[in-house]
Picture 1 (cartoon, one colour):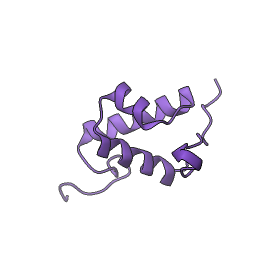
Picture 2 (picture 1 turned 45 degrees about the vertical axis):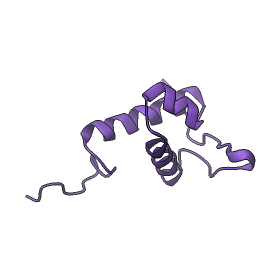
Picture 3 (picture 1 turned 135 degrees about the vertical axis):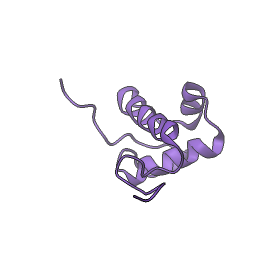
Length: 82
């Protein structure tokens, strides 16, 4: 088996902590309906570059809209109903 192979569970760049942190950030964005870079930076103690990577990945995954006027993004995904 190849080491560092890309699989559905580790398709995001970085180690498993980064992958878990990305999924936690997604859950936060969907739950709170907020996707500001400063909010994610403070909540998860992320660097500017990592926040930008996460936001771009969320856009690719259909969770966020592309930046609108003033850079604001809309949260597209709804929280699952209980």
